[in-house]
Length: 165
Image: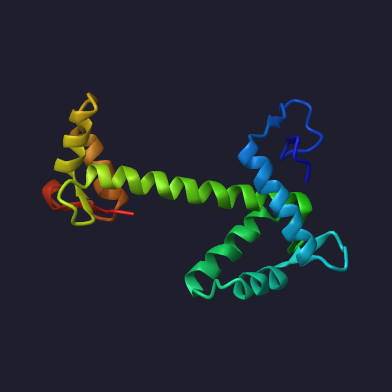
């Protein structure tokens, strides 16, 4: 895995390469070390069985977490070989790191919006946060879309809550 430039569509001249941050370089360096440990025979790829065995050995035994890891593994298998090569493993590492950061930011946002601390966010709390930020309040259409997206299209808007992360 190159720590200088990362281009997910290697060889595609139309798409510029992304210059990695120091944090991304660090992740890719660690991904190389982990890949080498998971591929001691130097086959150039690791299968899902090797991958999940490594996760279990490192302490991830939660069935939901393992299921999610297998799903992400499948998404990173860009060539559908039922295994991932070094470059794909690097992509998996970068995506995993990003998910941690996204979850952290979502949690901070939900803590900001969930004023009463009940781990549910209602439209009143959303409007209060928007007002504080100087943004327009939710329209009726916005409320309907949000209500539908959480599976409650027929509920009164005051009854709809969004579970905090």
